[in-house]
Length: 425
Image (tube, rainbow, N blue to C red; front, side):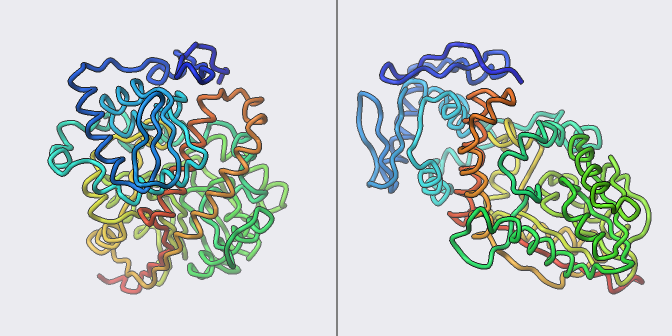
């Protein structure tokens, strides 16, 4: 990825942000907006901001809101044009373009997340399917689509992820002993999370373990150190290459097999299955297939430990067909499920019984804060890898947006235990 070079003017009082029009075509150019659309957007945005506990300061104009964290709109015309054309996709692209900023973006985004259900007037929400962008057909999570979707995120660069993850290279929520969390406590907190999952799944000496979603191999390493025989599946070539290096360096390659394989292609029978924050990449269309795979691969009496990000069921239903900024720039094809969707899918399509569920969303907010702060501290190193300023703003927004979701309670994270106690069903 080459550093951006294209000019992009924002507010005259600010330095312009260079945006590469080839790499970022929808950020480099402000979409055209008619006078009527721009006026309608300004009215809707103004109405929403006036009722929120924020201070939205528009260059050359008003300050709206009830008071609170500052949102600075440097280029109001571009800001409104993007939101009018693309809704929340445009809101994110406007941040990437430098048209708005905030001294504390998490605080601003937390307020927006807390009021997500009523930011858009009810009549427009009822017409969501008419105005909201739709998912591209080529991002469906078919076997080929999943490979492409996973690669677009996880194959960006192992070096990039290593810059902001801790030494365990674990890219999922940690479990801390107390708050506030600190960077030096993160590796132990990640091991605590992994050990809880392995304990839930009953993983020990001789366990045949299937892991769906390898990451960079830390869970497989920890399971193998207990004496388990691990088969781990991933669709990321970059992750697999580094995970194999780590397995060999630990002298555990006789106990760990890491396969470039879709979960639907898994074979064999296992005593336990563990899958950490993988279901979010499956897509609602394929949730039954995913859970049937867990069931089919699990031996009678076996256990499944699942870690999943979740959102409220009504919000999931309202947004499941909407193409979002996160889909476009971070996780194509993904959908965060609700606890109800997970439990209904498992009940209706498998012989798996829900035994336990534990929520720990506050821990994810702290995990994301540590990643975001580390990413910010190492911005120069990110740039040295060839990632331009637009990408760095994208990634900052993604981490802040995600953290805000957990701080607002809009998002949560769960650890599930499913058991297969009735093989005759």
